[in-house]
Image (cartoon, rainbow, N blue to C red):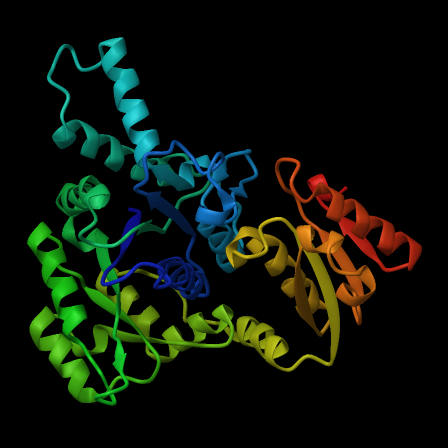
Length: 386
C-alpha cells in the first residue's frame, strides 16, 4: 500500500518546506523507493498561470502542459521524476471541481459543505497521485503551502487529519517544518515559537511525528529536550535544518541525522540501504569547481530571484556537468537603455534572455541582442528572448 507523508509549516512562511519535502524525497529515492511529491497551494487561483511573477515567482510548466507552482521544479530536480497536473492542487481547483459536480447533480440535492464535500475532494485528489501513476508508488509526499493558522489552509489540514484515519495510522506520517529564531540580545536560540506552532497544529487534531527546525546554528541538547517535552515528539525526531550554501546539501544533512532511517521505521517501509554517494559527488562539484564563467541574464523580473529559478538552476546544473561555477549577473532589461551596454556586459562570457510578458523592457532586450551579435558574445534566447 502507498504510504503518505504530509509536510506542514509553522511560525513564518518561506521556511523551505519545498526544499525539505524535496530532500525527503531524495533520501527515500536513494533507498530504491518510488516517490512522488504533490504541492497544495491554498490560494483561490485555479493555477499559477496568470499570477504575477513579482508576487509568486516562476510558473513551472510540467510535461503535460500544466502551469504550476515553482516548488514542482524543485521536486523534479531532487527526485529526477517528471510530474504532472495532478501534482499541484489549489483551493481554486478543488472548489471548481466541487461546484461542477453540484451543478451536474452529483450530490443528489444535498447541501454542499466544506465538510465533507470539500475535504472529500481534497482527499480524492491526493489519492489520484498513486492511482494514476504508471507504476506503483511506495511513498507520496504532500506539501501543504502556507503556515499553520492561515484561514485558507484549514480545509486542507482537516482533510489530512481525516486521511490518517481513512487509510490507517501506520500509513501516514506528519512532518512539521518550523523556525527557531536566534535572539542577538540574549545570544541564544528560542524554541517557544515552535512550541506554539506545534500546539496550534495539535489543536486542529494533527500530532506531528517529526519536527524539522530551521535554524542558523546547531540546536543544543537542552533545546531539543524542551521541544521533545512540550511537543510530545521523540528526541531523535527533532531534525536540524541549518542554513547551507547550496540547497542540494540538505538531503545530506538530513541523512546524517538519520531522518531517512526514522521515516523508514515509522512507516515500516521495506527498502534497501541509503546510497547518496552520487549526490555527494554532485555537491562536491558545486563547492569545488575547476573553472568559472560569468553569464549575464537580462530580464524583466530580475528583482525577484524566484522569477527565473528554473533557468538559474539549469545554468547551475550545466556548470556541474562541466565542472564549472556559473556566476549569474542579473540585469534589468529597462536598465540596458539607461546604462551603456559596454559597462553592463563587462567581463560577461555569455548572455541569456528569458521569457516575459508585455511591452515593458522589450527595447532593452533588443539592444542586448544587438550588442551580443556585434561583439560576438555567445547568446541564448528563450521564448520572448528569441
